[in-house]
Length: 273
Image (cartoon, rainbow, N blue to C red; front, side, top):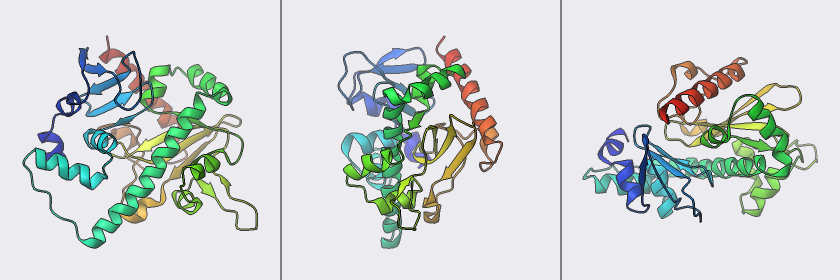
C-alpha cells in the first residue's frame, strides 16, 4: 500500500476531477461529492488526505477513488497500482471473502459517522455543539475530526440505517446496536453522547469514542471487525499514528483524546498562518 501511495500524487489524482487552487500548504476547490458554490474541499498532499468542510467527506487517495468511482477498496488499490505501473498480487478466494466482509462493516461505520455528523448540526445537537466549543474546538476542528452527536431517542441511528437497507444484524455486529435478548426491541448503544470517530491508518472509521453530556464519562466502542485481522489503534483521523496514542484505549483515554484534539488544533492553526 505504501508503494502505491508513493507512486500516486493525491493532488494529481484529485485535480483530474476538481479544479484546485493553492491556499497555504493545501489545495482547495469545489467538492465533487456535493453541490456547492463556495469551495470547502481541501487537499493536503503532505498529510495525505482530503476533507470537505461542507459535507464531511474525508479520506486518502484510496478513499477518494473509492467514493468517486464507486469502487471497493481492493478495486481502488488495483486501479491506482495499475496506473502507477505496479502489479498487485491476487488474493485467494478466502482472502477476497474476508476483504468483502471487512469492507461491508467499514461501510456501515462510515454511514454511522455521517449520521452522527448530521445529528450534531441538527437542532437536537445544539447542546453538543455548545459543549465542544466550550472546550476550545471551533467549526474547522469539529469538521476535520468528523465529530458528531448520538441523539437521545434510543433508536435514532437504528431507524436511520434500517431505512438505508442495512440489516440490524450487521449493526449489532459492528457494536452500534444492542439486542437485549429478552424480548425487547434492539436499541442504539450510544445515546445523548458526543461522538469521536477513531480511524485506522487508511482513514477508515473502525471505532468510536463517546462522551455523555450528563456525567462526563467516556465510552469506547472497539469495532468487532478485529476478528477479520484489523488492528485497532486509538488515534483520530491522522495520516501518521501519534506516539501518544499507540496504546489501546484505557480509562485515561478521554484525557488523551482532548490533549490530541487541542494539540492538533494548534498545529492546524499554525499551518494555516
